[in-house]
Image (cartoon, rainbow, N blue to C red; front, side, top):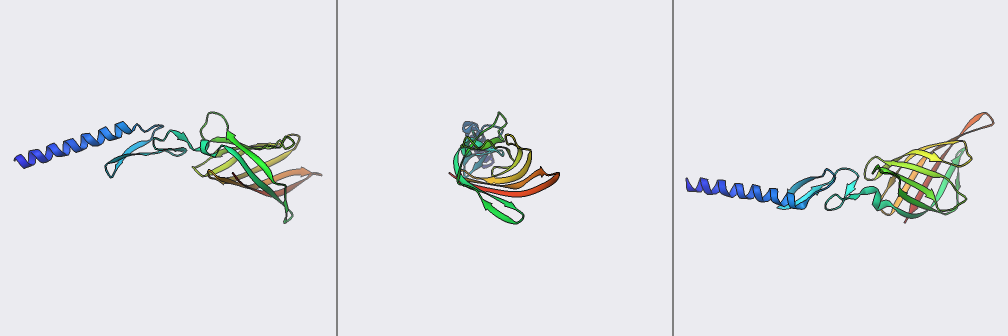
Length: 170
């Protein structure tokens, strides 16, 4: 009987100790706390990272990237000039960010939305003085991004389609 009592007491101490470790971990942004090898570990929701899930994923992507756009017209790939791109947060929504050229003569801005920690879609593109529709998607990491998509533009009453790829690295 004493063994059963001591066993129950030991289990109670272990359970209460486990809860205390998870409470001390203080996971943030809706993350759950799990005990792995008797250590409290936060399981972050998508778009959050860090030991306590206190870092927005998009924040680690902010910075200057260098890359060269390639546009394909009628099956012919035309390589652009090496360009610096600035990636920055866009608004309060943790999934939104903006990519734009640091060259003042290039006003193109890609407004993007993360769909996972590494994938995004282009939601809107602003090109000053142009009547283009640009759509696409891409992948991103802390050191590089890649966008690919389609450009459609009406010229001489016909719609012209082009594809593009931008690969850039920090």
